[in-house]
Amino acid sequence: MPKVSNLFFKAAILFLIVGIGIGIHMSISHNHNVIGAHAHINLLGWVTSALFGGYYALNPAKAERRLAFIHFGVYTTGVAIMAVSLYLLLQGVTAVEPLVALSSLVVFAGVLIFAWTVFSSDTPAVSRKARLA
Image (cartoon, rainbow, N blue to C red; front, side, top):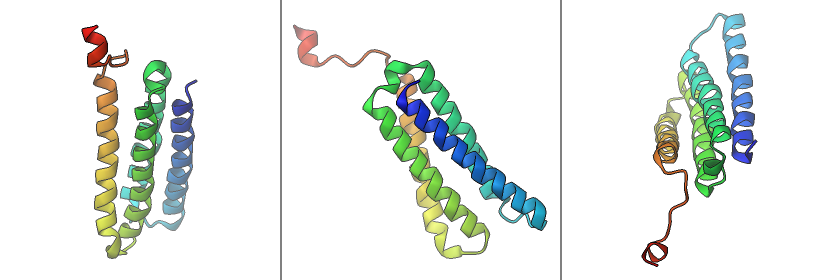
């Protein structure tokens, strides 16, 4: 399995553990005020990261590109910061609202990187000089 796939799957499992932990806490406490953070962690963290890992496993040529690792770093960092800041915001810490907004943009940038990866060619770009030769 490509290294970036393995990284995405490991991150996905960590997000799943956190998401389930928050869900259990909400259930035990009967306080569901952080359900939005719980949903974001499970969907953006667990599900989407696992899907990214699966895509790269099925497309090893794209998984070897530097852009795949940039994608992992940008997206995972954005989701981690968003998860913590959204959780705190929903707990009433309004000072983190700008961090929620900024991390949302970072996550979106990660998604745009993935879109570029999906729509790009499987073959490496040939330099203009090589095409003219």
